[in-house]
Length: 191
Ligand code: AP5
Image (tube, rainbow, N blue to C red):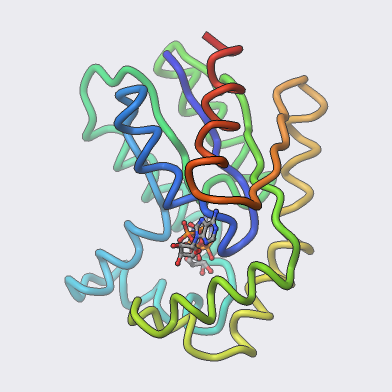
């Protein structure tokens, strides 16, 4: 199986690029942010719990997020592989993911990080706020908080994959097509 962690700060292009990789490689896209937003829309208990953290730009607690991902993985039969988008965001989540995949007799192939400077991230998210309706894009203070949380709590996860030789960083600036091409080049070296 081909299992990619698509990593990067808010606005790096993880969701955008995942759509192309799903088509190209036949992978299942699992975005924890999308799953939380679906739960908020459906008014579930999980959605109500997650919403207050998301609106403030904070991480939803590990236990809640890991249990949610586990339940999603259990719904999928005979996948060719996964793109994990927005997960893992903490070392505890990285460890949990390793255990969940081990139970499925598979493992992460690589973490690929989209590297984008902070000014560009803020510009992209402020632009998206005009049309996305995402509460966490609407307020510049919340955008800044998401970036700060990424730097403090999520960026260290990259070291987890560096240590096991599975980290690859690529330039996430350029046209969407250019970034896709760079991603595909890296993924082709993994197969
Ligand atoms: P999540 O939904 O994961 O949001 P995020 O990480 O903040 O990422 P975004 O969706 O904002 O950005 P993206 O990298 O996907 O970029 P996109 O392709 O959309 O998480 C939201 C919240 O949920 C978190 O804050 C947290 O509260 C909670 N959460 C989620 N997962 C969690 C976890 N594991 N643990 C705990 N809490 C969790 O692109 C952004 C914009 O840029 C778009 O408008 C796009 O069109 C544009 N764009 C894309 N590529 C380019 C390009 N090359 N050039 C110009 N513009 C581009």
